[in-house]
Amino acid sequence: MKIDEYQAKEIFTQYNIPTPQEILCKTPQEVKQASRKIGKKVVVKAQVKVGGRGKAGGVKLANNPQEAEEVGKQILGMEIKGLKVQKVLVSEAVEIKSESYVGFTNDRSSKKIVCMASPAGGVDIEEVAKETPDKIYKILVDPLKGGLHDFQARNLAFKLYDDVKSVRQTVSILKALYKAYIGTDASLVEINPLVENGEGKLIALDAKFNFDDNALYRHPEIAKMREVLPAEKVEREAKEKGLSYIKLDGFIGCMVNGAGLAMAAMDMIKLFGGNPANFLDIGGSSNPKKVINAMKILLNDDNVQVVMINIFGGITRCDDVANGLMEAFDALKINLPVVIRLTGTNEKEGLEILKQNKELILANSMQDAAKKAIELANK
Ligand code: GDP
Ligand code: MN
Image (cartoon, rainbow, N blue to C red):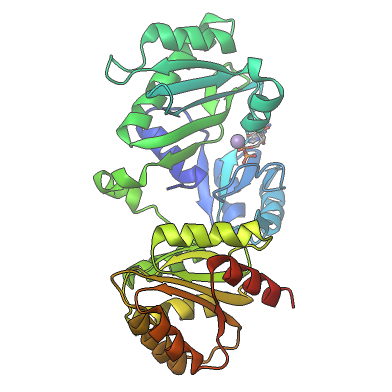
């Protein structure tokens, strides 16, 4: 789970990591008032859960309350990487002497926590990792052997700064950040940039957290921060109806019984040059209600041009499934082509039933179904 910068900074404050004075706002008027309250130059920052807001025009400096209101108008309502900006953080502008990067994440191969630091902060850290990997320093931290040791934090801090004053501050920030990482069951925490201001004080100017969803039950105050994105809403509703649904960005709606078969169906679509609109596992039953619910989800997705149903009857019998499908189709108004591949126990009986509906396009294999679906989508 991801949270916004302002929420991440609230956690930083709890762990004594210095952040600028900040006020969250939802309207340009609030931005103006916040700027007045802070009483100096401010930075207005879009609160969206993606990186690179600065580059996208979502981080802007304002010299006075009027300018702040103007900038607030520009940023509130804009779209960054498909997300609409509904909140901004008004933050006291900090004079920047240097920008660095620090962060913690899990390192699967070593089964430890990796602490990363780079003097090349401020910019996209993925880019630094690609272009100049020698500018990223890493140490491995073993949570079972005392966590982050002082000497480790010091070693890293000296890669960022030469002077003892900055090194000391970095050490205490790294230790606090590690505590926050462990204390919240995070899977990633980052400060980018960690800046040195005019007075030589180190401040976290930006903050990022990802949390392990499986540990959220231990942190109700963090779980409360969850904001359900539109796509997640459909996924959650599907789950409540016993369906496993994940929206993707293709155009062939898939309905399959079984997760493995669903993956195979998506692979097949890709293999023949198509693109699945979703992953959808309706589970191993012939319940018409499930088919109706699944069909409704697919029909509600504007990207879906054709529906491909791929059913293997093992314990569930194909004639049962076919009856379920017929019942579902009778109950719904379907204005898209539907390709069905049905195989397994009582396949012959099942197909006889499906043939009664002349609009259904029957396929005799998964390959055949994928090819037919792609062909129909391209029409
Ligand atoms: P991101 O683009 O989403 O990572 O947003 P950041 O909060 O990291 O801001 C991007 C960049 O804007 C920073 O690296 C800084 O260069 C600049 N910036 C942000 N806040 C301030 C500030 O208070 N003062 C100055 N001078 N620059 C800032
Ligand atoms: Mn940043």
